[in-house]
Length: 261
Figure 1 (cartoon, rainbow, N blue to C red):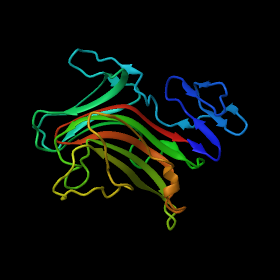
Figure 2 (figure 1 turned 60 degrees about the horizontal axis):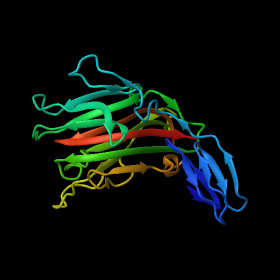
Figure 3 (figure 1 turned 135 degrees about the vertical axis):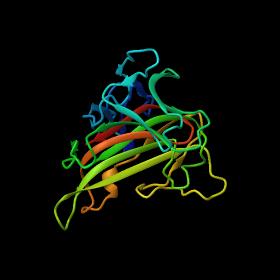
Figure 4 (figure 1 turned 90 degrees about the vertical axis):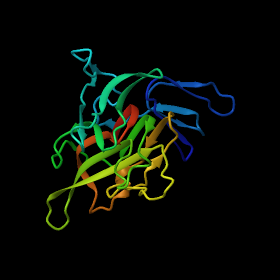
């Protein structure tokens, strides 16, 4: 990130080489650092707080039997079907393109909705993470959509092959009670050539994002809190969920974090 002559560098793993101007020596950075161009000054800065545990899926609970999936530590995964007799989705952790990834997939030619879900947090409406003291909240994820059978995100805009959902609590200005809210982001690869399907969902603050198929893509939400008025500002997070929704899909997620500072 570059702003006002300052370069802020964060590494998600591995070194970053910074090449200053005026033929100054290269700088190798392995943690969160700030570099001031005018003075050639490099200093370490405190990284943001990570609210999600095991966001890179590096810690895995190995399956107890060969036919069972390997689960990422700290995450609870499940599957739901609109048609109970339809094929179920599969979730597991494996290495893809040299990186550890959570795979969410469903096949079998199914023609009804299903959702393969992994999540962290508490029940909807309960306080899991208090964010009232933070000024910034950012969702970052890196993923790879192998395929999807349903165009765009379905006729309701709610069936993207990858969706990110943040359940939060805010203070009702009239009653003073904590009330629930949700924030959803959707990603897809297969366009809707008919134009009949919506480009967003009722609780999405942005239109769904179309990405290239079979390509790694990194999404950064920017500061979520900046998009809320003072009366609507989230004060706590109840739950963080990533899930694949639709008919057939195959998605790999190598990183899913929520950063607060």
